Length: 191
Image (cartoon, rainbow, N blue to C red; front, side, top):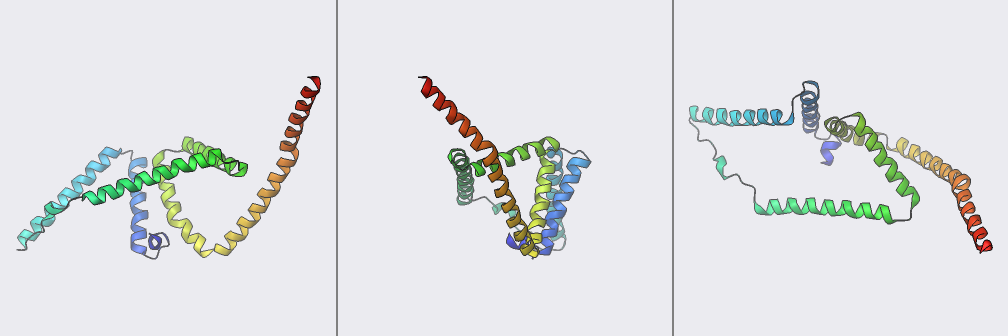
């Protein structure tokens, strides 16, 4: 996978980009739905296998016996365990972020989720996945080539974020805490 994302296997990387682009164009521009596209793909596969096996018979060769292809139980169980482990990890992550008292992490997660929600209102799921594939195929290569510049920018951005958080903490959060403490003290004096 690393070779594909970093474009070391250029043919396969190009094939992924072309397949994603063709799928997106067919479903978004030409308004095909998923079932139509899958049935046409199945028609193409069945017709290709039919033509291939008949061409082999015409050439006097014995076609391969494809009836022995099967999904083994071990493979199905391994896939199910992988999906289950991923789901458990996601659920644990949600609880860790929710219960930790680390405000910057919580605020960052909430901001990302709100951003995804906003982006979801602007485009449909297929376009979102297409953009994700394009980003996944181009950003690692870009990062690999410009790693030093990106690290310097991220350090600069982290410093700005810390300064911004300190300003908000100093101006807003401390004032709110002081007001709450003052109100509590006033209530205790009244009692």
